[in-house]
Image 1 (cartoon, rainbow, N blue to C red):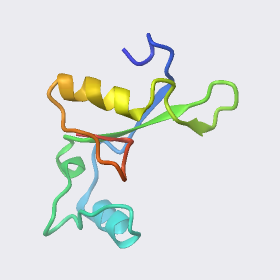
Image 2: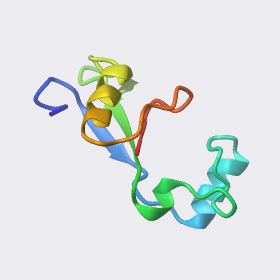
Image 3: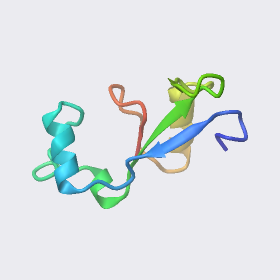
Image 4: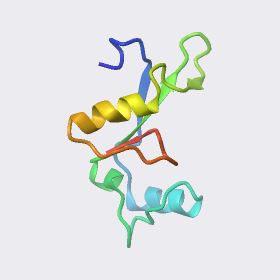
Length: 90
């Protein structure tokens, strides 16, 4: 659906190990430490989606915006957007 509507998504971080989750937590990039607070990424039930500007190949905001894609995600049964982590879909 994203590609059909002109977006250029990249899927990243679908599955994380406990160690990778802890590294992200220690770096301040996640609120889940991987042990006491487990991320859905550790179960393969979450993914990060980034978008590419085809003219520059740089990361960019989606054409339709993150709020739009999260609304579609929720319609399909996913969780709402986390404001501080807009690229996270679970």
